[in-house]
Amino acid sequence: MLPGGRLKYIHTIGHPVLNAAGDLVRFVGSSTDVSERKRAEMLLAGEKRLLEMIARRDSRAAVLDALCRLVEELASGSLCSILLLDPNTRSLLHGAAPSLPKNYIDAIDGLAIGPSAGSCGTAAYRGEQVIVSDLAADPLWADYRDLALPHGLRACWSMPILSAERRVLATFATYYREPHMPTTQEHHVIERVTHLASIAIEGEHAEEALRQAHADLARTSRVTAMGELTASLAHEVNQPIAAAITDANTCLRWLTRHPPDMEEARAAASRVAKDATRAADIISRIRLQFKKSAPEPELVDVNEVVGEILALLRGEAARYSISVRTELAGNLPQVMGDRVQLQQVMMNLIMNSIDAMKCVDQTRELAIQSQRAENEQLLVTVTDTGVGLPPQKADQIFNAFFTTKAHGTGMGLRISRSIVESHGGRLWAAPHSSLGARFFLTLPSCSDSGQ
Image (cartoon, rainbow, N blue to C red; front, side):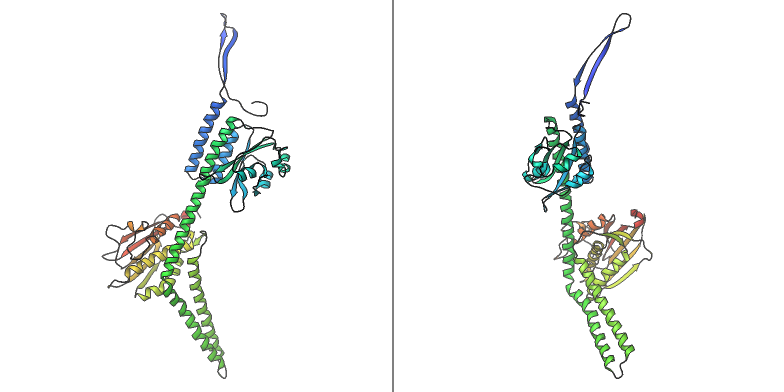
């Protein structure tokens, strides 16, 4: 360990020289400075660990923390920080800083970038490295040195972390407790590490964009399905409204009698309230299907989900003379999931069954069954007497853009399977007797998911 706390790695080889009596005369040997080789080995091993973390999709926070610790291990006496650029506010947000004082981390969280905003704010603004060997005297730190000096921070260099398109994603800062200029080796390490940081950050952005695209596509599928139900839903809403109007007129007639019949009027008013509530419930369920929001896991009763979707599709089934039969097991455990997404799965399955039975001449029956399955799973089965599955293609119907409908998008079942799998379950299909199809859906119960 050298003055200032820096480390030098030495490889020493030697042997003693003895006289005839076996006494030590001298020691002959050599010492070689192997610091560069040692640090190169440490850097290579560190890069391997980090790439494994990125490949395993470890959290971004864990990867960035490991990046900082690797540089601190290679550059003795350094304290590292990663700040993430928020493109909307043009400010830097805390990403990782395992060794910096917490008070200082909190003080610079949300730092606005600019032409004279310390090392990091300036590096993000310029898109190039900024080296400040003594922040006590550098004008870039005029507004920030009172934050850094009380914590013993004297030098800070910052390297922007760039995307493949050269956009600034974040900054990587290296602090020292004494005035310091980067060595060639330190500069090399930071260049390598910031490249890894860009891979981790861009990977996270890409995954988020993919999740958002999937959510948007799923919502589009819901909207398309709901659009196909417009006439039927209008009929569903119109029924309770018409009943409410009739009951309201009945109530008025009872009130205008001489004398008013209060009991009959009260009963009619109660029916108005019930009809209005039923109309409001239908509208609420429709609005949920159009809702655009992040998935919100909650305890969900699968039987309730089935009932809610059947309430929406009752008119559609009636229009095509389809009888609906349910066998829903009681006392089923709940599942942890997003209610709207699970509603979407049930809507896709039931709508597909209705579509498959519209033109068949035989009895049209839709059967939905729920029950406990093995390994703490819940099983929902949707069976129809429609045209059946394409021959030898029971699983192909879940492929993107594969459809047997004249005007289908081929995405409904693909999205449904993706939603079910994201909940830890399975979705598959099989032919049913001579005609028709049967869809099977399993979901882990809360006891199985550790809730």
